[in-house]
Image (cartoon, rainbow, N blue to C red; front, side, top):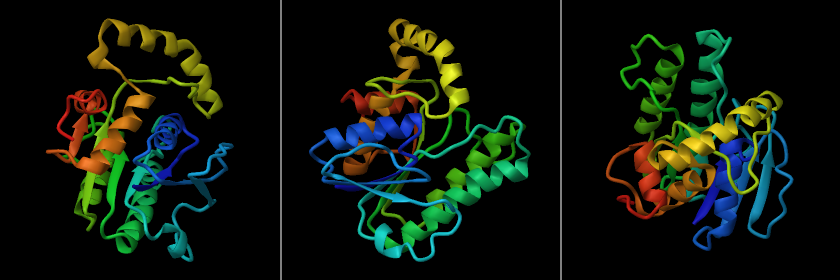
Length: 226
């Protein structure tokens, strides 16, 4: 499998990258981001871009891939719906539309959020925008597309948030999340489990296009339908 990862320097993206580099099923990895990952590995290549809304002149680098793991995302806190739409819906669809044109056999996996509103009409702004993004991705002509809604995630294996604010928040919340996972293992997934589940779904598919936290955990732990 030749897999590309958008957002490999973020917390989820780091976990996905780590699992891709460890998994012999994944033969080539392309990390696409605004800055280098700082990781060196024989399987890894990188594409650094500042403008994620314009993929012109990038066809050569983006063609010939089997899977895309799209882990980019921002918090909606303090953002208007128009700004959040631009950084979530517009940005994601700009990349995904290009990838669908170049890779008809690609499986596209998008990290969404627990509570995403597939009707696009709910009261929560972020959930409406995420729902609109999911629905648009599912209409693109990929071989398959899956929406991951992991909810609470525990960082493991040396993974840590890259954003300073997130790092400070996780310093407080991380131990709590770890405790919740030990007490209620089905309520939390790890960054490693998200990565493993993505690889397995990209390789073997899944009965439904939307995977909630329990689905992701089951696939990662070998008891799901992928």
